[in-house]
Length: 332
Image (cartoon, rainbow, N blue to C red; front, side):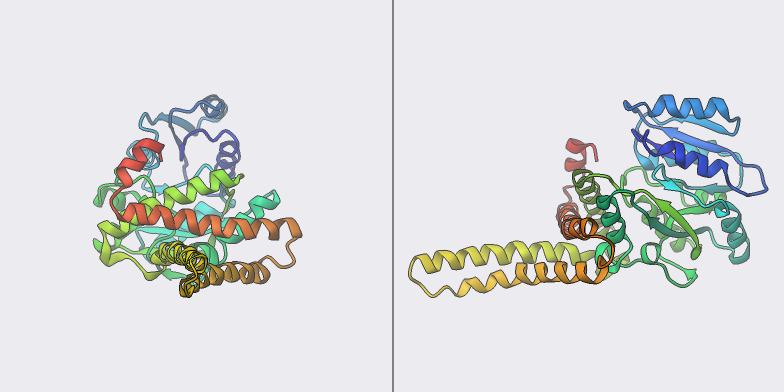
């Protein structure tokens, strides 16, 4: 478990690991990045209270660096990748190992079951788990068990991780997808099963959500540029939407200028693009947020475009090879 400045969630995440009903030996390896919010003290207390919990120093602080530190320190042949925002069901490790043995897969994973506690968080969770939010991947919305492109988190054979050289530490986001790509290219299988559903706590504010989505889109664009043959069309929909809305709005403004100058304002047709998108958001809210409370529905109207725009803008910048410069200045 890589951890950085996450005192709010890490205790519950570790407790969910320690509550597993798996019969075999278990160790909990926390790769702690340089934190200033009390996380270091909290995980130190957890380690002092339980002999199975060990804290490892992650000076770099990034997720892939923390994962690699944990994998290298691990003693056992199965590696369970955990996120500090996630809470594992009690049978998670047992079911995952059973599926690993039954299928012969290199990696087994399931669903990111996003669940919020406030109206805003519930709106974010709803966006995560619907096709209109994050694209409808099986690990977001569910699906049939079988081979997959990628899965949420993952339970790995350690020798498979060593075969492909662990996580690529130059990739700060999307490192799971990239690792699974290498597993598949070297003859391994990534296996999805809906039996593994991990509770995930979404970001709690609009600013944190926008930053998360921008960073995710930025690195997704980087990956699309690096591995053009490995990308589905769904990754390009948000950036195309952003470009369409921007161009349409600029054309519409040009139409207003035309009208002010007494010319035929034919450029006003550009406003059709942002209008169509606004109608899409409104219809999606009616379809998916109906019956979930007025506050959640109201936030969904804001959350959905926040995800699309932040992710889409990030993707464009990442695809234009600006990832390294932006990450250097933002720490993302």
